[in-house]
Image 1 (cartoon, rainbow, N blue to C red):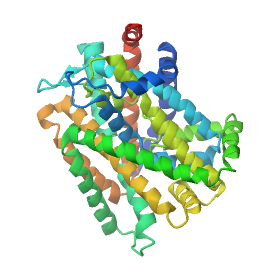
Image 2: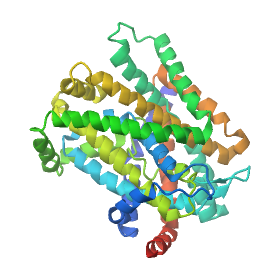
Image 3: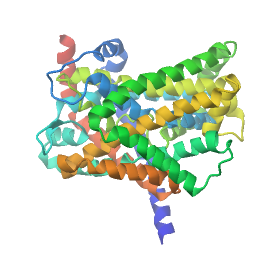
Length: 446
């Protein structure tokens, strides 16, 4: 019976991939055109907006902290292993389509950030909050509250980090434990799970302010460190670089690369196989940017749209370059994380895998920090602010669970929840898009 239920859940989860892909890509195209190509025209202005502080505005964190916390959530293990898998399936041309999805994701994130500030609502303590659930109740009206409740229920489930914990445990086993002769037993995995939960608890139990402070420190470090590692690989293999970029563009319009791009976009988050790495349109960013101290919606939207250019545009490209330069994607018996590890080890002998493991740890923990906040915010909306903190304990328990148990139907359920978060968010943003259009005109007249 349970096997039949599990197969049914998996079938439904797989069936949702195409509708979700159409929703996110179609939504991105709509937002890009409807906004008048704001992401492409005003990226420089967006960079300037990051440093603007508005201390008197309602909110809990600065725009910079909201941006880094949102990036912390999206830059994870999938930016490494998922890109490698995509290259195996689709070849170098896959990367071109990831760049395209990053551009569309910027348009979607612009609308998410703008609407998150435009339509805030009060929680049970009377504190202003932002997020898709409040966009629905304050923007569409109280009659749409069932949709907001639906989003929040799916949000509580969709932001569990079972897969992230599982992937990190596997990476530690491969890089550290197995070479040291430590067997992959349930007790070892339990110890790793408890270690992960312990580290995460030090941050998430401190609330959004501690999460934002840690994210604002760790994100620039981890992206910068990864950039320097790949820059070293590029500089020591300069003769190969022109050929690599040539292969990206020459193979971008083959059927194989199109399929790879689709797979890469889906796998690159890890557990979120049906969504893009930047999570544009899923609604997670609305919760983080809704906490920003910013009274100017369009300015927050400009800040929000930077994230896809970093997580999908920069970090995924860095992984791709490291793999393509070393031609590891053509090795049939090497996949995912192992492929990237071997690429780094070939370019930085003796140290490559260790240095990459530092990046993996930073990427993994940063994702977990921000995801706990998303689940807490959904709990706040459903059960009240005074009960929201209980979600953190459930979240920490799932980290241990993810390290120990095989992930089958559980991950499919999380993916289904994640998909419905996106359906709710994109639908709401399209309905409210005229308000964004009006705000764009007013803002850029100044």
